[in-house]
Amino acid sequence: MEPPAVRYETRGPVAYLTFDRPHVLNAGDRTFAEAFHAAAERLGKSPEIRVVVLTGAGRAFSTGLDLDALAAGELRYEDLVAWESAMTAIERLECLTIAGINGHCIGGGLQMALVCDYRLASDAALLGLPAVKECLVPSMAPYRLPRLIGLGRAKELILTGELISAARAEAIGLVSRVVVAAEFERALAETVERFLALPVGSTLACKRLTAKAFDVGFDEFREEMQAALRLCLTSDEHRAAMIAVRERKSTP
Image (tube, rainbow, N blue to C red; front, side):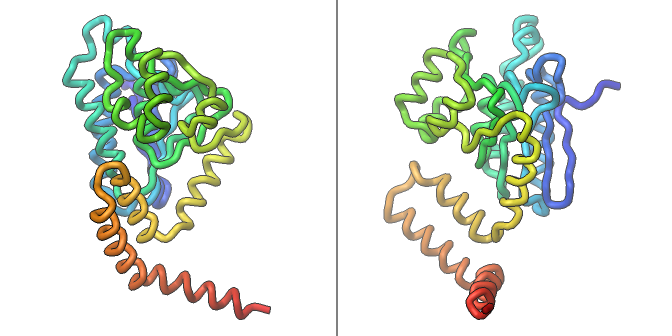
């Protein structure tokens, strides 16, 4: 029996999705698309999960579509739509999501990283969207990428299809942080712990609000912000945070 193309593992409130086709640098075929979609559905039914980590087995995060499978007609339009549906579902999860970019993050791999809230990259990674070179559209990246790095830089990556270094990706805001490869696993674990330490209510409120930053007007956004702020102020988490502040102040 072949191992799953996407491994799903939980450790307490953290779920790990590991792309597991290392022999093709975690490129995705139909089985991968189906497994990724199933994992996204499972996450959507797991309210106990607070942090999700996407990462890859071996030396790549993911190099996107398995071009051999695509050329052989083994990847259909419907499979690509299912892949995008899974990414959209992960983007809308009520928890924090981290792309642990341990290696090359190309095409559909970068598209999967784009739907995460935070992107940690190894300095050995290359990133890019070469879909245009195969006469393809990089799914919803033309929507997501300009919102992340600006229209001009997004056009450069999408229209040239060229790959860039992790350092360059960090410089333009495509990834949140770059660490040397030898420190990657430690840095990823620290990032998970840092997110777990945050209050759930305020974190998810901020995630929902920032997701709407480019799509609603100022007045509507302010109303939603104030409603979220009101809920935060009356929450047990806020009260606990204020107790901690008072205790720190009273400590000699």
